[in-house]
Image 1: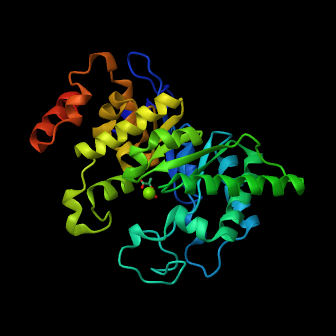
Image 2 (image 1 turned 180 degrees about the horizontal axis):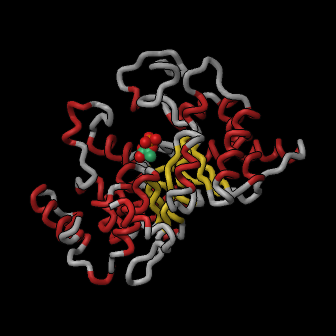
Image 3 (image 1 turned 120 degrees about the vertical axis):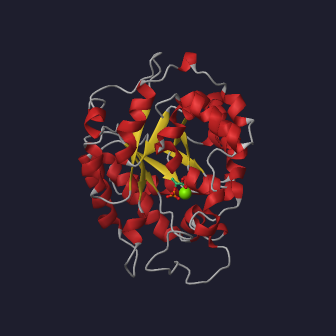
Length: 328
Ligand code: PEP
Ligand code: MG
């Protein structure tokens, strides 16, 4: 199975009717870069930076971060790397359950995490922004903010980035002056308002792991409610669709970097909904590519709107089977 997939490595990612698709990889640790460069990815669509902050008492300094980010872009041979600013809090705690504020809260997923934490710790956030900017002098880097829920957060983050650029200018330190900035869409409110956010960014990236958690009110790490975690819930599909439409309207790239993007059962559906950029665990790339390269979008036996309008799980399974064909 694996060896039959390897023939896809050298092929471009394109549907039978000629639509090009970009397949990117998710990275969590520096050593992932080796796996990724041999996996057939066209770049890194999500570089999670939390590892830099974990299992230590003080946050990493600018030089340490610069060297980590520089290693990644250089290791990717100039393919684009999207670095996400620190998404700590909730399921991603520092040092064995401790969060940065040292407080215990009832609903950490709804609390001080991700961009909220970044903005509440401006010194720490600026250190990371400076390091990412400086690394952009060594390859193609994009910057992405996690869990944006309000326009104010996005503007504040962009403003801090501008300030860091000005500092670097003064210090005569190099960076990519055209670095692209994106927001993650992982909160239902942001998907509903994606059209507004799209006007303030270069790209959007859908984080389905959190989007599903928040849409369906299901703790993503609680096994007791795991059975309710459903990427095909019509509400989830509609939010994804709204985000894709917002990107089209404003000519802004939309990617998906949650687990859903790497599951070949959903590839055809997502393609039909209009997704063109998938970022996933490197091991999933060739399988997803196979599905894409075997798809003819003009001849899909199922209308995507039917799938988005179906709430009956059995009927949904049938539609998915139909769209995927007998082999999947
Ligand atoms: C997501 O929420 O889908 C995502 C990609 O981010 P993380 O899993 O790191 O929260
Ligand atoms: Mg997330």
